[in-house]
Image 1 (cartoon, rainbow, N blue to C red):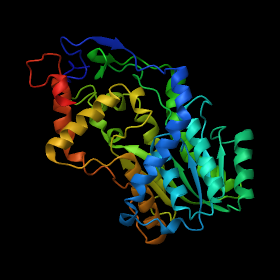
Image 2 (image 1 turned 180 degrees about the vertical axis):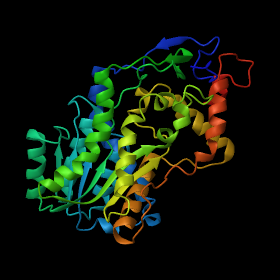
Image 3 (image 1 turned 90 degrees about the horizontal axis):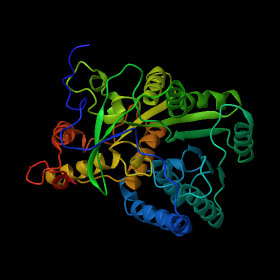
Image 4 (image 1 turned 30 degrees about the vertical axis):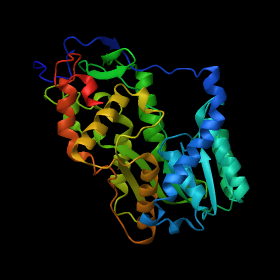
Amino acid sequence: MTELTSPFAKPFPGVPVREGAPPLSRPTKEEIAAFPAEAQQLLDQTWTEQASLLDQFNLDWLEGRHVLLAGATGPGLGGALATAILGVGKVASLTLLSRDLKKSLNFETGKVMEAQAEKSGLRFRWLNDGMALEGRPLENLLATLKENGAERVVYFNTVAAALSGLLPGMPSVFVKDVDEEGLFQWQLTPLDEKAIEVTKFVMGEMAVRFPQVLEDNGIAVEASVFADWRGSLDKIGRDPNQREYGRQGAYSTSLYLPKESLQAYTRENYGSGKVVMDIFYPIMRTRALPLIPGGMTMANITDTLMAKEGIRPVRVPELGLGALDRVGKALTEGYDNPFPRLDSHDVPLDEWFYEVVAHLNNNEDSDFYYKRWM
């Protein structure tokens, strides 16, 4: 291998190094006690924002349709989709799949959604035993769909479950991040074979195999809709021989793996008559973002760049409406872009973003002192 030229493949001088990736943390008793109220507030705030924007999007297509959302509790995109569908209230049924710990914000949002649906009379089921291609969880889902009269479903998958690290034989990647102690850099470490397979399977292979499983069991799939981020397209960022190696952080090393399955499946089905969409979103502030090395720092720097350029950020509640609007156009108006972009507002900032991150440092006299950029 030639000498590495990427600034992201070597530690930045004067910035502390930590190996690995952000660990999962257990909520405190105080946080657990606050989750029910926080969940209610989350749904209320999300719907308030969405309701103010409804005249910009067409959600009429939801009327009479059966919608299946995988990974749709909590403050992420799936939660925004569910909140919008519940708020509009036109669907024939809404079924949510999740696998949430009972002492979590996501679980509490599921309970709030359940209560809201019951109050409004909407046919709603929340199944918290995960998504599966066989076995009891699948049997429970099929029984629920048939009970709801859902012979056809619109399937959204927004599951977040992937591991950040290096594939075998790949050089190190260093990702800058910030915590209460200041600026530091993650040195990504190798993933074992099991971790790689999990990363490929849950968000990727299982997600795209699921529509056929439904079809095989008598449930037609009107549309299959997936979630992506443009870092997964940056193949040059995966090449150690290029200066750009590692510029997408963990998306240059492992997080692109499940997205390859989504993109391949979408390409295979284009022109087949099936509605299959892999929608690209900007960086979204969700509960999963802090688990990605440098995730929150990426979001904070991007917000700074957007402010400097006078670009209006598009947040998760609005992105949920945008996704529903595009899917509706595909189902009712012949819209046939298999890779819609809801990130077009911040795409022009990418090259600037890479340079800022490469120069970010701890020197208070520097133009690139980290506190100036977030």
